[in-house]
Structures are given as C-alpha cells and as structure tokens.
Length: 292
Image (tube, rainbow, N blue to C red; front, side, top):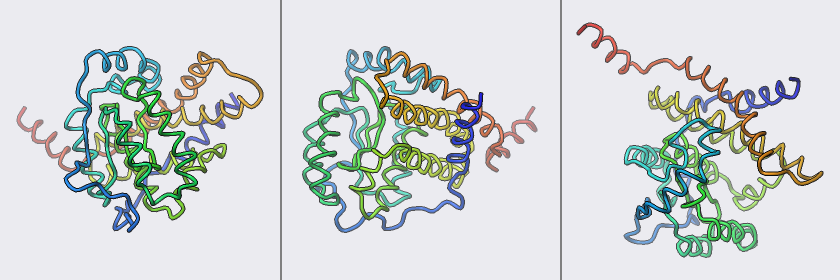
C-alpha cells in the first residue's frame, strides 16, 4: 500500500495540472526545421488493409486496449474527426512542418527525413535516430501499434482513433520544437525517470489546449485515457530499473502496467467529473430542457 501511495502521489504531482494559462506556440519552428517538400501533404494516411489492420486491431493491441480501457486505442482506423483535431492543434501551435502519418508504414520516407533533418546533429541522428528508425522498419506500428513522436525525423505516427492520444503526440512535437539542444533532449529519455517529465508536459499541454478551447468533453477524454497512460509510463520506468537486477517476463510487465494504471483510471475519472461544462454545452442542455 505504501508503494501504491507513492505511485499515486508521483502521478498526481507530475500530471495533476493542465498548462494554464495556455500558451500557444508562436514561431517555434526555427530556420533549421526540416521543411515539407513542395507539394507534400503534412498529413498522410496508409492505404487500408483489412488483414494487416485487423491483425493489429484485434490481436496485438488487446493489452493496450484493456489497460487503457478503450476500444479506440490502436484500432488502426483513424476517423476524419481525429485527424481534424490534430490538424487544428498543429495549426494553432505553429507546427507547420511536423510530418503526420495516420496508420501509415513508410520506412523509405522516414529514413529520408532522418538524413535530411539538420535540426539534430549527425552524431545523434546516426546513432539513436538510426536505431529508432530501424525499430520502426523492423517492427511496423502498422501492425504492432505504438502511437509516438519521433524527434529524429520530426514525425508523428498515429494508430489510435482517439483525439487525446493524437494531441498528446502533437504536444511532444511542440515540446521538442521549443528545445535548443534537441538531440540531447531526445537522448535524455535514457535517463531513468526523466521520460515522466516529458510525458507530464505533453499531458498537461493536451489538457490545457482543450480547456482553452472550451472543449469540455475532449478534456474529460484526456483525463480518462491520458492519466492511466501516464500510469503505464511510471510502471515502465519502474520495470526498467528492476530489469537491472534480472530479466522480467512479458506477462509480469503487463500485470505491473495494468496494476499501476488503475490509480490513473481512478484519478482520471475523478478529474473528469470535475470538468465544468463549456457555456455552449450548458446552453444546449438548457434549451433541450425547455423544449421538454
């Protein structure tokens, strides 16, 4: 119980606050930012494939769906609404050159972006960046899932039809865009517990954005999915440290992640219940009541 208390406390302290007052990104893309090529779409979609997408949706993503308790997680079928939500977030924060791949497997494109991304030094790109791109190539998220932002290619990869998850990855891109030493900041994820700081920033920015927009339902969704997700990051860091002393089996990893996600579900739902309805939503409810 004492350990659980500290997990909950760490979670609450790190992610309990939205970014308030919310600060939109302004001119955060610098002169070295990797530019989209002329005529290149910022957002691309993978061509639907019933077998491949079904394999990812109904098999490989089941642990993530159960832990986060959402069927939309890694369902490999991103709706236009989720795409629009991410597009609006990127535009509002001045992120015009971040590449977005919606359920797309494009290893050639990613290797090209890795080589052309002069915003991060070659020493970082051809070591950690190359490793991340090799992993992307060998273990395609198109099958195995794993929504993420890759700072070495400045690319967001989305496999879940959930706007909170999509904006969370967009928030990582915003965070990195404002860092001077991007390679070092990316490498800092190798430091135990430091990823919790970065994940906390992305979660807070997502919640803050929706609060600024007056999107109360979206803010509630943020709490319901991003808080238990943060619990899995805590578990991941703990498991990483524990692995120094010996190997940990995959079933044990899943069990620990599920257990630590539970406080996140509880806190997230409490926070969601405290979200005030947006004025327009309350007016609509009042009108509906008057009609009855």
